[in-house]
Structure formats: C-alpha cells, structure tokens
Image (cartoon, rainbow, N blue to C red; front, top):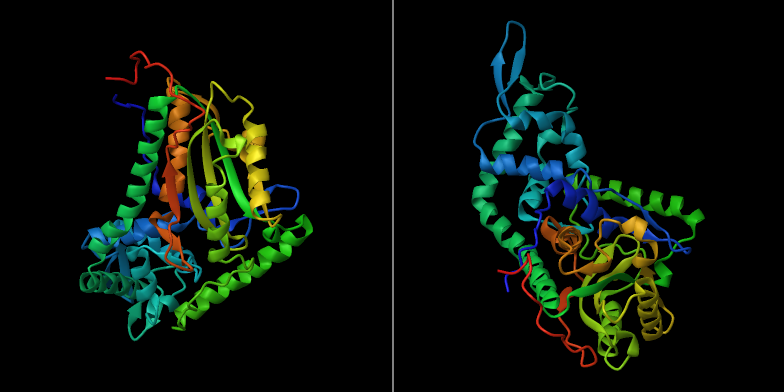
Length: 392
C-alpha cells in the first residue's frame, strides 16, 4: 500500500518561532495553563538565514569606497540587510543549548571580534583607525568564511541535520504503519511533567525576570570569552536520570493496564525547558472504532503517570482543550481524512525538527526519542481495507 498523504515541509521560521520556543520556554502553572518565559528564540531563523548566506556566497556585505570627505558604504549583497539587526542576532546566544555547526561558528567568531563594538545604526559610522562599521562587518563575514573552511562547517551541518530527518522519517513510517492496520484513530497528546516545575501565576513575573537575567549574563560571558559551564543551569532541578527512570516504568507498566488495551501505537520525545527541566511530549494512538472519549482516556494516561511517579508527576491533557491545539490533528483522525492527517503530520514534524538548529545539553547519553507501532493483543486488525484515494 502506498501512503500518499501530503507532507508539508516546515520552514525554518515555523520551527524557530513555534517549535523551539515551545520546547525551551514553556512552563505550566498550577491551574494547568501553559505560559512562555525567558529568552525567546523566534528571531533565530534570521540568524540561520544570515549564516546560510555567509557560507553559500562569496560577496562582501558592502563595497567600501573613499568619498570626498569620508568613507562610504554601498550594499552589494543580501548580507547588508542584516547589518541593522546584527545586535539582535548577537543577543540570541544562550548557554543552555548546543547549536548547529553553522550557528556555533557565528557565535565562536564573535568572541574577540571588533564587530561587537559597533552601534549598527549606520554602516558609515567611523570605527577608528580610518575604518567604518561596514569595514568591520565585512571583516566579520570574511572571518566566518575562512573559519568555516578550516572547520569543515558545511559537512558538519549536513551531519547534524541528518538526525532530525531520521526522526521525522521514523515518525512517518510509524503513523503509516498504524493507519495500515487501523482505519480510524483516536490521537491523544499528553505531556508528562513534574509538579515541582509548576508555578503559581503570581510567581510567573519573577521567574521570567530570573530567566532574562541569566540570558543577559550568558551573552556577556560569551562575548567576554568566559568559558560556558559544563552543565546548563536547571532551575527546576529535574535531572535526566530521574526522568528516564520514571518513563521506563511508565512504558513497561502500560502492558496489563486496561487503559492501554486498545492502544495501537505511541511516540514520545524527551525535552527540556529552561524552567521545567526534563519532561516528555507523548502522542498515543488508539483504535478509534473501540475508543471515542479522547479527553477522558488522556486523563487516565495522566493518572497512570501520576501513579508511576508516586505523585511527583502530573500530565497536561491537550485533548481537553482542543481549541488551543486546533492545528495539532488530535482527536479522531480517519484514514481518508487527508486534511486532518496533514495537520497531524505537521504537528508531529515539530517534535522531530525542533533540534534541527538547537539541542539542549544532555545530562547523559540516552535515547530521547522513540516510536512504537504497538500491536495490542486485545485490538486485532480488521478485514483488509478496500482501495481508496491513498492506495496505489
């Protein structure tokens, strides 16, 4: 059977403005609402575009000539368009994450480079020693290109992205396999979290200020050449070993638990937020011909997590508030419902693609992503489906 559901490619803007912020900056309040705190990453896509142009082209950003009274700068490539926002790009640095090789190259080359002293208002602004800021900007671009050749950055970028593409292929293979056996799915999204990471709403402002202060320290330390700490600061103190141990028990004890008797597959990914520490984003697939109450079943899954963690954990039931996740493709998804299957694919793509540009610094070497097309003994496959628009 050929599965011809449309897979829309996510743009870097979508990944950076939606996916990465959700991973790094989310915090759940004590009443279950999700808030975003800390240093936002939604401008990261501009930095990705800048580094891409630096590595893929040879032209300088400006042509600098001597005018009648002073030096003048004329834009000669698209790189010049990043001059006025360059200060913003510099401030995207965070000590909490590992960056893809192209972004790492950018931040490494910033250290000790005089371009960091520019005002970035006018490329013709004098910069001392007979130079203008356009000269310094051009020199920074040239420095990046020279260092990229030394480090083999382009090959490193390709290798880095391969893992995200592998995860996405695994997700699509899993979903296609499940739909091959089950024509009607009930899709549940459940986030497995920890109570000690919750905040009362009156604590959110102070927490946000604390994270912002850390972000500013990260940038200043990096530009000053101070080596980053070995482990990222974790305000929530949920360590990776505890989280992984809890998840292993959660998965192992799904078998024999009647809540999961009609489950036909699942996907989980371990993630980390600046305040919430390690947690898990999970998608569970149930046989939709046997199970209809998606929010209720998702609540039972949360109860299972709470039992496994002996009350330390709780779950965020996304199916309970579908309006907030209207583009997630959750709830009932039928095999022939191509629009909703496309939404489901795009939503799952965020899980695979979030680490295409940044990854949290791991506490240990361990699996952070898994798919399973679980065949439940209590949910036998039905008769073969007649050929339809998705089959060749």
